[in-house]
Length: 345
Image (tube, rainbow, N blue to C red):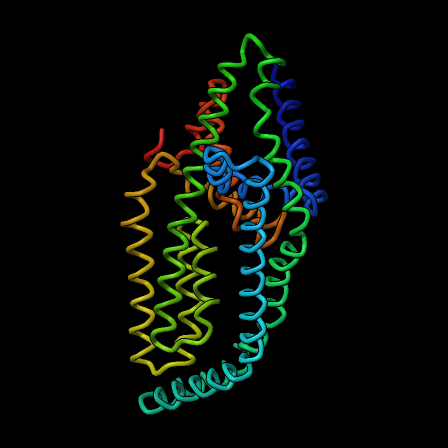
């Protein structure tokens, strides 16, 4: 009995490794497909609304595809233009960093010459190089732009998802006449909950990103579109996303603005994101999708390792979708409880 359990555990580990290898190998196909699935959930209400207004199915699908194509094109233009401007300005930020470190060293030297000598010995102005970021930035932005280069594949998957969803109930009734009603009910519950989560989360992130972008623009901070887009994407990752969307802009805000103004903008940025993330979002979304913090971290690492930056952004939506599926399938409900946070289940 004990040997069979050990063998089962080893088989589980091998299956997990094989699944990870398969997901990584099929990334060029699976990543666009997953994005298309989430886009289908986001835009299917629009498609159904158009058909309720007696717009032909083919025309409604074409209109949705035109809208999705416009959104993808706009996002790719924002990322590309912001990344180019940001990369071009990095040498300027490097000079400001050196001046800031030198100013801090001189200020410290007025109180402790020994500590000043230690700071200069460490050569912080050389070890902390803002200009070393272009390689990392190029790799990160390149990952996002590569997905937009696969826009045709995303659109193709989206077409089949939108068109195929219409005839699925009839196929289900023919394939499973006895259980069709129960399966259709579970499928509908899953789709409704996933769509509600994705729409709500996307709208909240859009409000968050737009507010941060306007705040940066109002105070004359460089690259407000970049910081707004960073906020929009990073808040798909609970807790960790807020650290990214507040911490990264703060560094460059202090390199650009005077200390007092930089502190004010950074505190306002923190206040905006804290208010939206901890006051508005829980009221709107509730705690039904509360995930274990450990599960969020493991999911972030796993999907980030598999699919890079896009995997990090999609990690929590994928995990939340899996939890919703487990909640609606009786045999998998214990897994949903284990995936919940302290308040869940």
